[in-house]
Image (cartoon, rainbow, N blue to C red; front, side):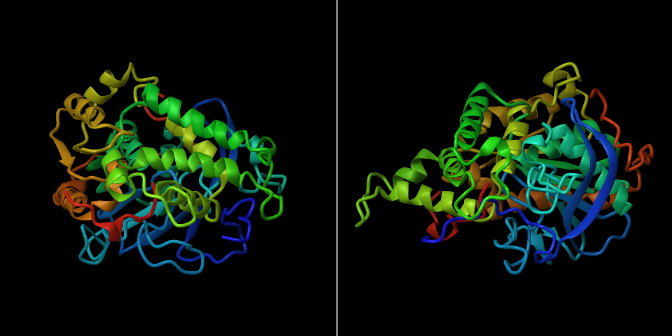
Length: 404
């Protein structure tokens, strides 16, 4: 595009709400890595009617948001990122389920994050504390409390959303009937730390990063170049080698650019116009620090103690979260591994809606009848938010499904 991107594309009060609603959790919210938030605002969307036993929590990945279903429009620059799965008659059937999808802590589409106003009225920016997957889930538990939801019939997510679904099963077993964990691991690997730390370095090395305090800059004055580089690196890891070879190979466009380079530039520009660089850094750092075994005696001990039915699925061409990670997770949980066949790599969890939808539908099928048999969770107030225990062929028409 000829027009420069905004310094931040974070949603701000005064902009169209779209379908968002908000809950504010009073603090202080003590964070796992030593920081404190005085309070947290959570943006979320709902579909369906709550009957007391039919709530399903859907959790987004790195650059997603609360808009998992529905068209684009004012307040929602992109269509729902899992629209094929959520809605009347769909695998997460909103005629049956009350679906809640929050924007994650650290996000930029209404939930407290680096672009949000701190108590002094200025954006948090460089002052935003380090957060973890566990912190994000404790805030989501606070949202459940505020909505009067004692128990989730299902907690579902892929990629970073899958990390949080797993954390829910480990940390809040009395509040989850079934967890569905897709395309993630139980702890970050060395390669993932390397990839993520390099993406963070790309953003923070941008001369317009300003230590994280760029939010008041004019269009073109934010760290969009660094964010774009990070997105390009990330996007390569989200797709498979065979897909990129089949779609692009070494083909050159009339303007002299390699077609695959143009494709990555396009996705980089798109992200800069709908996301926030500080959120990209904060959430990438949270994924980099993911370890479900932290404070619980290690991953093996933590997973062997899980008593929630967990559906584990992986994508056979995923090179970011390779299938061996889901195999190991399933083995420790004592469950079957579901393998989704896809040429699209990690993003298969978004693109392969028929296969992913089928396993989600099956995993949810017994959930409503099971909710009433669960013990009521010990009542924790929203304000206290206690730490959890242990502190095929290529279908080109679908290739630009909402990004990871």
